[in-house]
Structure formats: C-alpha cells, structure tokens
Image (tube, rainbow, N blue to C red):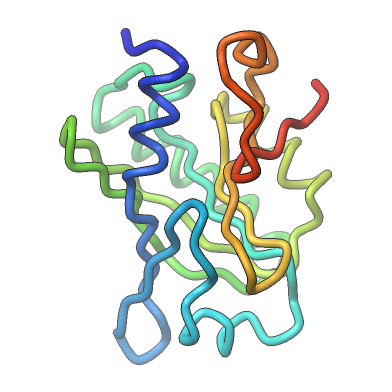
Length: 156
C-alpha cells in the first residue's frame, strides 16, 4: 500500500484524459491550466470535474467490479443530465489506468457526495481555466502533507 505522499505524487504525475466530441483527446494535469480544447467544451459550465468509481481508496478491484462501479456512476450521471465526456486516468509509475468521466457544471457539494459514495481518495477539479487541482477526501492525510496550492481539502 502506498503512503499518502506517494499517492499524491502518483496523482500529480497522472494524465487525466478525456475524449472530446469528434474523437480528439485532451488532458488535465494537476497544477496546470485547463487546455484550450476543454475550455471551449466546458463553455461557462464550471467547475470541471474528473471522477472515477474504480478502485476505492486506491485498492485494486477485479475488472468486473470496476466495470459495475463505472456503470453505476454512469447511470447516476445520466440522470443528472449534465454534460460529460468519457475519460481515463493514466499513471505510468506504477502503471495504473482507471475509466473516469469529465463532468461540466456539477456543484462541488454534489461531486463530494459522489466521490465519498464511490470511496475515492480524491477527484480532479478545475473551478476556472487557470489551474487544475486535486480535491482530497482523506483528511487524515493532512498531518502528513505540506500545504500545497494544488490541493483542495474538503473539511470532511
């Protein structure tokens, strides 16, 4: 099991890729501005959120379990009628891949509920085009992680 610091390093190094209408791809990166293609797609529907239902608390599940969790999240998103794109989080060291969704306009409070329901340590958030941040739900990590402008703590 990775330490909180190691997990945050992995999250920072991960590419959060989304497939745009027409097939092009664009990626969010922690601490970086939102790419132009995603700025155009999101229009004025901020925040932009990248969330997965896979591997709760970074514990690897069987592929079938992750597919079921992803279908459940997709069903929830379909009912919300928010705009979304299919995405994948790609880490290289260690190699890790999770099916995810990029969502425009979901409130942070609603995103928090989904992230907690699906057991996520964190989600990726851009409240504006200037910077992409990690919204962390593991407050027990606060004592181990230095203050960082790229991390949003939830207070839970």
